[in-house]
Image 1 (tube, rainbow, N blue to C red):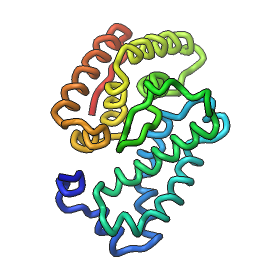
Image 2 (cartoon, rainbow, N blue to C red; image 1 turned 180 degrees about the vertical axis):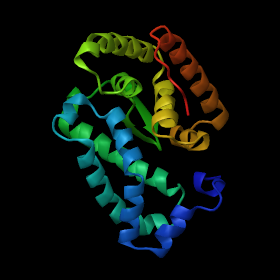
Image 3 (cartoon, rainbow, N blue to C red; image 1 turned 60 degrees about the horizontal axis):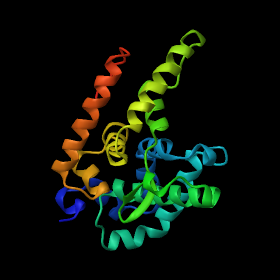
Image 4 (spheres, rainbow, N blue to C red; image 1 turned 90 degrees about the vertical axis):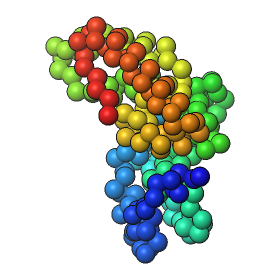
Length: 213
């Protein structure tokens, strides 16, 4: 059964069906922050110096506009996951174009919807876990905690880092995250719990509280 079929009544899809390009733009803007967060977690620092998340989202929106008629003719994904798929593809294209042979090892990529895109990096996750605002007096302490969190995240399997990114930062549901990764929802839930527990244990030593969704 497709993710769309299992979700029951989909108001976003109905909105797209009765609307036009303006409806797509409105729906895309509704999810823009979640999509931007997805890019921020995965964009390589070397690409970030040339493109930012807004550039990736703009190119993905053009792709979505072209794909909209075909999507509405036979949707198999919920609208948000359809949008996320196009953003993921645009991010992968940007990495190939700007990095070429200097791309990260393929083992650090996660296969999503049968396409490999950059996985959530330990740096991106650590920055979002700890936040970006720090006073000068706290800079040294934050740098120490950042290094510790990165080390903990590096100890996780790529798919576990991805589950943390999907569930905690992208705010995907259990079934949505499982659909993205192509795994059973129960398996995904167990992996998420294990990864979250491990991070909480390490972060508790630095008195930094991390709450899951």
